[in-house]
Length: 326
Ligand code: CUA
Image (cartoon, rainbow, N blue to C red; front, side, top):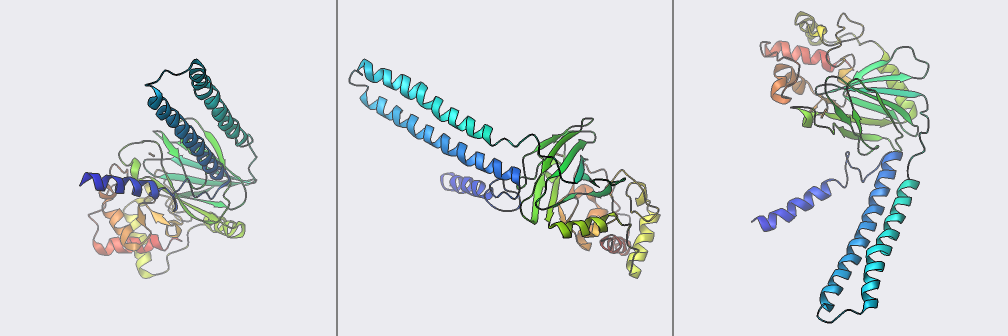
């Protein structure tokens, strides 16, 4: 019964945007607060206009059997058609302009460079004064309570960077660096999503966003900058041997080892990330095995080849090695 199902589906879709880790209406950042406030005021203005204009329409349609006095017609046209919309729209416009962020509060010490890849995110942290960036991938971590600069680039095709709970979206264009900034207001885990169609797996290009207290962030960044921890268990050591034998290091870097590829995501601390395959799988040994065996089944068009020729033993050793890279 479409008549019953459709409203339920529409309500579910509408409410789906109201809370959770990827909501514009549940802001956790200075810029997102402005956007949410603008939305509610614009919605209020639109509702007032809609109700009054439709009220006028109903009024006019009911009186059309008797002639309208010249005076009433004038009032309707000038008052309802010109003065009223002008006042409401001018009010909304001046409110919107007053909410524009000052161009642009300077960042306070941290620049994060994010590059859109097919279909994952290259993320590099450059604290002020640092010489070389700390390379990571597929999640962005930010300190709470201060504004961080974000520089955006894209490799091959356009993407768009959007973490709805933290701020507005900004396109990522190959060959042109765009800049924005974010100022998270509370700690927590949020979710970003590529917001520009970029090919087969556009819908599978999510981005974990973790907002941390200042101290926790500093400690995390220091850890992220360090080389990989050596494998601890026998399985992990065997996994590293498989990693080397299969030539994974041609595409992936594990700092502190011979693996130094730049084609795919840096794996130095991959086990410490909140998710796998750009927000698509949980970070578990089982998911790592599934991903390595057949990435195409999980993310169509992914550059990573499948390794279904590996035995379950080898795959599980490889997963143990990667999971241990925290
Ligand atoms: Cu990247 Cu859509």
